[in-house]
Image 1 (cartoon, rainbow, N blue to C red):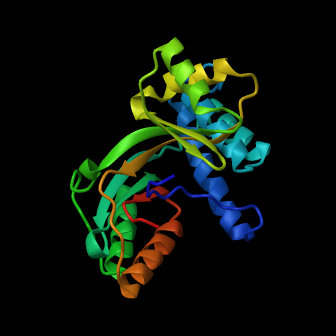
Image 2: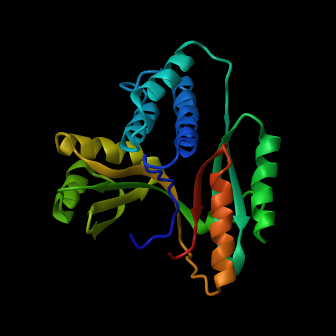
Length: 239
Protein backbone atom coordinates (compact mmCIF):
# COMPACT_ATOMS: atom_id res chain seq x y z
CA UNK A 1 0.00 0.00 0.00
CA UNK A 2 3.02 2.26 -0.14
CA UNK A 3 2.91 2.76 3.66
CA UNK A 4 5.18 1.14 6.23
CA UNK A 5 3.34 -0.29 9.15
CA UNK A 6 3.24 -3.52 11.07
CA UNK A 7 -0.06 -5.33 11.53
CA UNK A 8 0.13 -8.69 13.27
CA UNK A 9 -1.23 -11.48 11.08
CA UNK A 10 -0.78 -15.08 12.18
CA UNK A 11 -1.73 -17.94 9.88
CA UNK A 12 -3.68 -20.82 11.38
CA UNK A 13 -1.10 -23.27 10.08
CA UNK A 14 1.50 -22.12 12.60
CA UNK A 15 2.21 -23.75 15.94
CA UNK A 16 -0.36 -24.16 18.70
CA UNK A 17 1.75 -21.88 20.89
CA UNK A 18 1.49 -19.05 18.37
CA UNK A 19 -2.25 -19.59 18.01
CA UNK A 20 -2.64 -19.63 21.78
CA UNK A 21 -0.95 -16.20 22.02
CA UNK A 22 -3.18 -14.82 19.29
CA UNK A 23 -6.29 -16.13 21.05
CA UNK A 24 -5.11 -14.58 24.34
CA UNK A 25 -4.51 -11.19 22.69
CA UNK A 26 -7.95 -11.17 21.11
CA UNK A 27 -9.41 -12.38 24.41
CA UNK A 28 -8.03 -9.30 26.18
CA UNK A 29 -9.35 -6.92 23.50
CA UNK A 30 -12.79 -8.53 23.48
CA UNK A 31 -13.03 -8.55 27.27
CA UNK A 32 -12.11 -4.88 27.62
CA UNK A 33 -14.40 -3.81 24.76
CA UNK A 34 -17.29 -5.73 26.29
CA UNK A 35 -16.61 -4.30 29.77
CA UNK A 36 -16.34 -0.74 28.47
CA UNK A 37 -19.96 -0.71 27.30
CA UNK A 38 -22.87 -3.05 26.81
CA UNK A 39 -21.51 -6.56 26.00
CA UNK A 40 -23.64 -6.76 22.86
CA UNK A 41 -22.02 -6.18 19.43
CA UNK A 42 -25.32 -4.89 18.03
CA UNK A 43 -25.01 -1.78 20.22
CA UNK A 44 -21.30 -1.77 21.11
CA UNK A 45 -19.53 -0.80 17.90
CA UNK A 46 -16.04 -1.22 19.34
CA UNK A 47 -16.87 -4.77 20.33
CA UNK A 48 -18.37 -5.47 16.91
CA UNK A 49 -15.21 -4.19 15.19
CA UNK A 50 -12.99 -6.51 17.22
CA UNK A 51 -15.32 -9.48 16.65
CA UNK A 52 -15.28 -8.87 12.88
CA UNK A 53 -11.47 -8.64 12.90
CA UNK A 54 -11.20 -11.77 15.04
CA UNK A 55 -13.38 -13.72 12.61
CA UNK A 56 -11.23 -12.60 9.67
CA UNK A 57 -8.19 -13.90 11.58
CA UNK A 58 -10.05 -17.20 12.08
CA UNK A 59 -10.39 -16.91 15.84
CA UNK A 60 -12.80 -19.70 16.96
CA UNK A 61 -16.28 -18.58 17.95
CA UNK A 62 -15.92 -20.18 21.38
CA UNK A 63 -12.91 -17.97 22.15
CA UNK A 64 -14.98 -14.90 21.25
CA UNK A 65 -18.00 -16.09 23.23
CA UNK A 66 -15.90 -16.94 26.28
CA UNK A 67 -14.41 -13.45 26.47
CA UNK A 68 -17.83 -11.77 26.16
CA UNK A 69 -19.40 -14.14 28.71
CA UNK A 70 -16.58 -13.33 31.13
CA UNK A 71 -17.41 -9.62 30.81
CA UNK A 72 -21.10 -10.33 31.33
CA UNK A 73 -20.23 -12.25 34.48
CA UNK A 74 -18.68 -9.18 36.05
CA UNK A 75 -15.09 -10.44 36.19
CA UNK A 76 -12.52 -8.41 38.11
CA UNK A 77 -10.00 -9.10 35.35
CA UNK A 78 -8.89 -5.79 33.90
CA UNK A 79 -6.27 -4.47 31.49
CA UNK A 80 -4.83 -1.04 30.84
CA UNK A 81 -4.12 0.18 27.32
CA UNK A 82 -0.52 1.42 27.15
CA UNK A 83 1.46 2.91 24.26
CA UNK A 84 5.26 2.88 24.22
CA UNK A 85 7.48 4.73 21.76
CA UNK A 86 11.01 3.75 20.84
CA UNK A 87 13.95 4.22 18.51
CA UNK A 88 15.83 1.65 16.44
CA UNK A 89 18.79 1.85 14.02
CA UNK A 90 19.19 4.43 11.24
CA UNK A 91 16.32 6.68 12.27
CA UNK A 92 13.75 3.93 12.62
CA UNK A 93 10.90 4.61 15.04
CA UNK A 94 8.38 2.30 16.69
CA UNK A 95 5.02 2.49 18.41
CA UNK A 96 4.19 -0.49 20.61
CA UNK A 97 0.59 -0.85 21.80
CA UNK A 98 -0.09 -3.10 24.78
CA UNK A 99 -2.89 -4.34 27.01
CA UNK A 100 -1.52 -5.12 30.45
CA UNK A 101 -2.54 -5.97 33.99
CA UNK A 102 0.94 -5.00 35.27
CA UNK A 103 2.40 -1.78 33.86
CA UNK A 104 5.77 -2.17 35.61
CA UNK A 105 6.28 -5.63 34.12
CA UNK A 106 5.26 -4.55 30.63
CA UNK A 107 7.44 -1.46 30.36
CA UNK A 108 10.43 -3.44 31.66
CA UNK A 109 9.87 -6.18 29.08
CA UNK A 110 9.38 -3.73 26.19
CA UNK A 111 12.45 -1.72 27.22
CA UNK A 112 14.48 -4.92 27.35
CA UNK A 113 13.54 -5.72 23.73
CA UNK A 114 14.88 -2.36 22.57
CA UNK A 115 18.03 -2.58 24.71
CA UNK A 116 18.89 -6.07 23.43
CA UNK A 117 18.76 -4.85 19.83
CA UNK A 118 20.71 -1.61 20.22
CA UNK A 119 17.64 0.64 20.40
CA UNK A 120 16.11 2.65 23.19
CA UNK A 121 12.71 3.38 24.62
CA UNK A 122 11.62 7.02 24.34
CA UNK A 123 9.31 9.16 26.40
CA UNK A 124 5.65 9.66 25.54
CA UNK A 125 5.37 11.91 22.50
CA UNK A 126 8.91 11.36 21.26
CA UNK A 127 7.80 9.28 18.26
CA UNK A 128 4.03 9.52 17.84
CA UNK A 129 4.18 12.99 16.24
CA UNK A 130 5.80 11.31 13.21
CA UNK A 131 2.74 9.10 12.74
CA UNK A 132 -0.92 9.66 11.90
CA UNK A 133 -3.70 7.76 13.65
CA UNK A 134 -5.83 6.52 10.77
CA UNK A 135 -8.74 4.29 9.91
CA UNK A 136 -8.04 1.92 7.04
CA UNK A 137 -10.52 -0.13 5.02
CA UNK A 138 -9.57 -2.34 2.10
CA UNK A 139 -12.50 -3.71 0.10
CA UNK A 140 -12.93 -6.10 -2.80
CA UNK A 141 -15.17 -5.55 -5.82
CA UNK A 142 -15.56 -1.77 -5.57
CA UNK A 143 -14.05 0.92 -7.76
CA UNK A 144 -12.58 4.31 -6.92
CA UNK A 145 -15.65 5.94 -8.47
CA UNK A 146 -17.89 3.85 -6.18
CA UNK A 147 -16.02 5.09 -3.12
CA UNK A 148 -16.03 8.72 -4.25
CA UNK A 149 -19.77 8.51 -4.90
CA UNK A 150 -20.34 7.16 -1.37
CA UNK A 151 -18.10 9.85 0.10
CA UNK A 152 -20.03 12.63 -1.62
CA UNK A 153 -23.46 11.16 -0.83
CA UNK A 154 -22.63 10.60 2.87
CA UNK A 155 -20.39 13.67 3.24
CA UNK A 156 -17.48 11.54 4.42
CA UNK A 157 -14.14 13.00 5.45
CA UNK A 158 -11.83 10.63 3.55
CA UNK A 159 -8.12 11.44 3.34
CA UNK A 160 -7.34 9.45 0.22
CA UNK A 161 -8.14 6.30 -1.77
CA UNK A 162 -5.59 3.83 -3.15
CA UNK A 163 -6.38 1.35 -5.91
CA UNK A 164 -4.42 -1.88 -5.41
CA UNK A 165 -4.25 -5.39 -6.83
CA UNK A 166 -6.25 -7.00 -4.02
CA UNK A 167 -8.82 -4.25 -3.62
CA UNK A 168 -9.34 -0.56 -2.96
CA UNK A 169 -8.10 1.08 0.26
CA UNK A 170 -9.82 3.98 1.98
CA UNK A 171 -7.97 6.11 4.55
CA UNK A 172 -9.50 8.49 7.05
CA UNK A 173 -8.82 9.92 10.49
CA UNK A 174 -9.19 7.38 13.30
CA UNK A 175 -11.97 9.55 14.74
CA UNK A 176 -13.95 9.00 11.53
CA UNK A 177 -13.77 5.19 11.70
CA UNK A 178 -17.39 4.54 12.73
CA UNK A 179 -18.84 7.08 10.30
CA UNK A 180 -16.91 5.68 7.32
CA UNK A 181 -17.61 2.06 8.31
CA UNK A 182 -21.35 2.68 8.61
CA UNK A 183 -21.47 4.40 5.22
CA UNK A 184 -19.60 1.53 3.56
CA UNK A 185 -21.80 -1.10 5.22
CA UNK A 186 -24.94 0.70 4.04
CA UNK A 187 -23.63 1.05 0.49
CA UNK A 188 -23.43 -2.66 -0.33
CA UNK A 189 -24.97 -5.81 1.10
CA UNK A 190 -22.47 -8.29 2.58
CA UNK A 191 -19.51 -6.04 1.84
CA UNK A 192 -16.20 -7.94 2.05
CA UNK A 193 -13.40 -6.26 3.98
CA UNK A 194 -9.82 -7.37 3.48
CA UNK A 195 -8.71 -4.82 6.08
CA UNK A 196 -10.85 -2.99 8.62
CA UNK A 197 -8.77 -1.40 11.35
CA UNK A 198 -7.35 1.65 13.10
CA UNK A 199 -3.58 1.98 13.02
CA UNK A 200 -0.60 4.31 13.23
CA UNK A 201 0.89 5.24 9.85
CA UNK A 202 4.27 6.87 9.43
CA UNK A 203 4.62 10.29 7.80
CA UNK A 204 8.42 10.03 7.56
CA UNK A 205 9.63 6.65 6.33
CA UNK A 206 13.24 5.44 6.38
CA UNK A 207 15.09 2.77 4.39
CA UNK A 208 17.62 0.68 6.28
CA UNK A 209 20.97 0.56 4.49
CA UNK A 210 23.02 -1.96 6.50
CA UNK A 211 22.47 -5.66 7.10
CA UNK A 212 23.19 -5.18 10.81
CA UNK A 213 20.35 -2.65 11.05
CA UNK A 214 17.95 -4.96 9.23
CA UNK A 215 18.88 -7.89 11.47
CA UNK A 216 18.46 -5.80 14.63
CA UNK A 217 15.01 -4.62 13.52
CA UNK A 218 13.96 -8.17 12.67
CA UNK A 219 15.19 -9.34 16.09
CA UNK A 220 13.37 -6.46 17.81
CA UNK A 221 10.07 -7.28 16.09
CA UNK A 222 10.45 -10.96 16.95
CA UNK A 223 11.15 -10.17 20.61
CA UNK A 224 8.16 -7.85 20.84
CA UNK A 225 5.95 -10.44 19.17
CA UNK A 226 6.83 -12.91 21.93
CA UNK A 227 5.48 -10.62 24.66
CA UNK A 228 1.96 -11.54 25.73
CA UNK A 229 1.10 -7.91 26.57
CA UNK A 230 1.97 -6.57 23.11
CA UNK A 231 -1.05 -6.14 20.84
CA UNK A 232 0.36 -4.27 17.82
CA UNK A 233 3.67 -2.82 16.62
CA UNK A 234 4.00 -0.01 14.06
CA UNK A 235 7.17 1.38 12.50
CA UNK A 236 8.39 3.81 9.83
CA UNK A 237 10.59 1.41 7.85
CA UNK A 238 10.17 0.96 4.12
CA UNK A 239 9.96 -2.75 3.41
